[in-house]
Length: 395
Image (cartoon, rainbow, N blue to C red; front, side, top):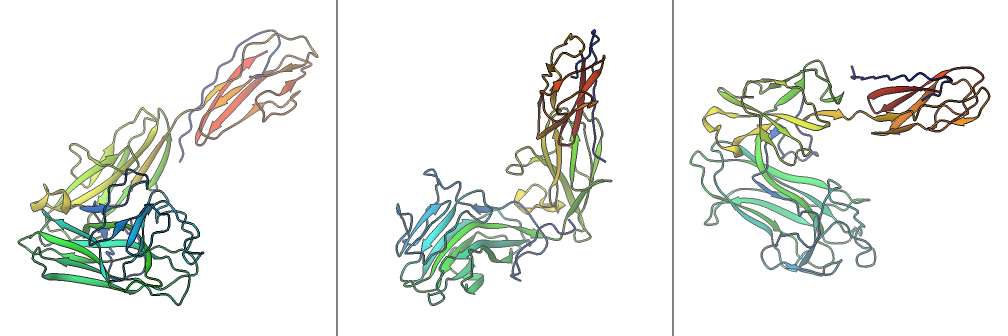
């Protein structure tokens, strides 16, 4: 049940004034991980799209200062509008809606978009190599993008690869995730990740890329708050303790557990000292804020290698601040005087009302007019999301 906190003050004067089950969900490309994922070992998200973006494409692709890049060039941007007479989609955001993406006018000859060398992985472990891609061309007669994801040895021997095939045009701008997963050998060698454009340039073969990732993939890991949903809303000052539980299934013979927390909505995660069992008793949090938690798991042999871990979906505990409410200064009035009340309420989406409604012009505004014919006490009730507080003052 939501937690509610209430308080009341009264002042006496002559007359009275009121005062998982599944860890992640993907689009229907069968090559992608269907279990739980870990943090990316490689994560190219193109930042916010401002001049500070540090990504540089490979194999001759040239960065462009034009909002609509020409053949063989690209830009890092938050959006694009009316490129080449409207033959490209107007794209309003990256696939998450919060950052930038790479907009590519492919080169005439096939070539690489992305190459990266990766080492210090976890042996005998699945990793997902994936990216979000959009065919930006609106005309059905154009060349369709066709991308191959390749994992190679440093000397160029292909270990595994996956091709998107021709990426069809869509009626509206549509991001889809493509990729595959790869099992690292026991000797855990250095590997090279490559994304290559197979289609020739020309009329078409224009695309947007976002969130190129290489991350561990494992069995489904679940987590929950005992007796609650995955999102818990409580009030500032709530002293209840909550038990978080995790399940790593039977896929691990000798699992190593670690609960983690985040105070920046999952951008960074910190191991919770001592929280190394499949349950964690969350301590009382005195400060308002949003607190995220997750249950991470790996084989005990590789517990010290962060790139081996996979994690559950996030548990969110929102600690809401109490609203500020003040019914105004004490008042003295003669019978039948007309007086404006002067309530103040601030907080998260505050709502409020005065009670009783007798002699008031409007109980749902902060400064209603009161014309009392007898002594009366008004109470100002304030509510901010799940938080309730009240204060009374007399007139």
